[in-house]
Length: 384
Ligand code: NDP
Image (tube, rainbow, N blue to C red):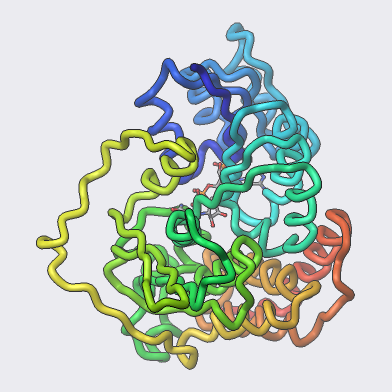
């Protein structure tokens, strides 16, 4: 039986991994919408290869180029924020939400409102919109499947169990490429060093988030919304080998863990095939080759981001959206060489101290908080 799929953020790292899985099962999938921001050529090539119904660039100035690449194919081309939402709201059996950042929020909400099953990679959307998004999921009876490897692991470990029986959910963190660096070394870190993740091959923004540990902070908030066991039952453990993707401990003392290679095709395949399984051609896990697994407590002196995220989660309301927006601005500034690595968390902390609006109750209100927090964070950018 053919299943239909849309991929928001098709030209990125998660998009690549998803399309690689679809490529292995070509006859089983019909591609509805593929989207990008400005990578018009790559998007057009993918749309042609997979025979997509529609291809959309978020950046309207890239639409002309997209149209040229798609001319004569019969594939619709569209551009702009509204077109992204329109594409996301087309019926599909599953929509992979893989736009990076809060830019993915409105299209993800459009897919949720359509009632499509949503495979969620775009953690910033859930962090920013929190209760607004989970309320929409409940209202429209949408199935939200976590793609983030940690949350996908937790989701798998929870199958057949009751949330009330959970004692702890443990998110594992690799610690990133800078795990063992001193504060002075962190201060002098270049963008190239920060994105050089030892285990995972990912987009630039999430790679920097892994280096600062904000990725784990965002995941802490994401887990809070996906698995409502209470913030006091969520914890983070550094596990440099990234073999155990997360764990759930139950009240009888049993701990279930999900293990796998550091390859996003595994959790994506788990979401695409849910509740069944599908083949991947990932390298099998060889535990004798890995030899040893190690675990450490996070160091929140050198990496304050997890503390900031935990505090924002406890504060609730608008705080996670402010945290996320400020972090996005600071990471972009770091990648552009405007601020130092250690300023990323400092700018995020100062924005949180400086801006505490009321809890947003609608998508528009979340976007307004996001926009204002960005403006304030941008004012704090200082030369590196
Ligand atoms: P990439 O940077 O590799 O790709 C991002 C995608 O989003 C691209 O298709 C990009 O288009 C598109 N995009 C960027 N900005 C906009 C915008 N303003 N409007 C519309 N589309 C936009 O990111 P990743 O694939 O690494 O990450 C995607 C999401 O998945 C993130 O939220 C990340 O946290 C999450 N995630 C990623 C993992 C990974 O292994 N990569 C693991 C777990 C979660 P274009 O190519 O044109 O710029």
